[in-house]
Image 1 (spheres, rainbow, N blue to C red):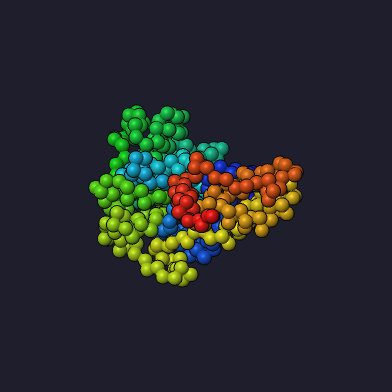
Image 2 (cartoon, helix red, strand yellow):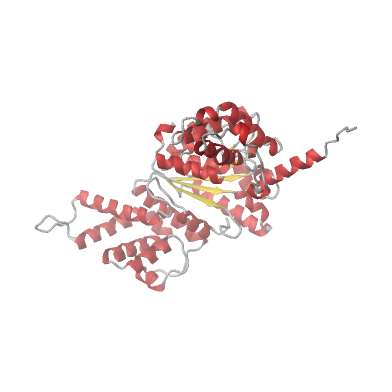
Length: 447
């Protein structure tokens, strides 16, 4: 992607996110420095998923190595292929991995497509029913009135029949999913908004749905751990029939499992193993599941190694980084060095320059960007791998914004890098403090 292909609105969105120190949700191809080596393998895997396959990928990297960025970069590539995507932050309190019903609920809450922001569930289901109607009408099996219009009752009956056929495999294990969809369609056609919204919430795994909505579908209770797998299977079917060839699900920060009680940790690891077994068994065609975690999670005794069957599934031999296999089940991110930071800064400068004063590119040239990268990295104890977020924030907020607004601002003369504890993440703060401690340990030979 080149700058000219990015709309002004998207450029503003990206620059705004960098100014706040967050990962942009769009335009990430512009910043995919060092990820080119993964492109072919990931595109092959997305193609396999689109052909009703299933893929699992484990991404490893230290804090600050760009795991979240990598996941969102892949999500953008998947969306361009028509995939639906969902990014879930694993959390002991909000999204415990061993409670798959909660994971499914978060998945639906964050479900997005190229044309719909989260949650896209209702749009997807409405689009699915429209597709079913089009398929029924194309078959020519619905009687028409003298004006050539299809009979409404006959059309609804035929759509219900086609719905049953499409969800046959799901209905065998989770009949409530198909029942809720049928009842949702009836409520939507009759204008009963309250029941329709309640059923959409129930399909999305939400608790505390009204009894009236459930009664209309002949269903009871809330979604449980085992029902969540059936609902995921049903969602994949609906997505595929709606023109979305697959679903990318990212379980981010899965290393949080290391910090929970041992029994909860083992339940979470077992839930992940169960999900992978179901994928291998062919239950989830069209699913691309990615997890991200630190090396300690994959290799340490508080992580994957506690469950040998899972550890065997994820085992990958890593040697010299330049020979890493991007097709392996587990891939590693090497993070940034000074050269990559400078290239990244140049790309952000060029993106910013599309809507800024012409002197941006000459005042903030590659040499200055390299100097700023060195300065930020130096403040973080030389750890370039954790510097991108802070480096880009300083570049946009302290340098590019000022050059754009003040005609006489020269960053070499008028800006000196300063850091405060409040603006740093925990990882950045630890590196910053360690650098200061190391500096205090230096012995000076003073007269």
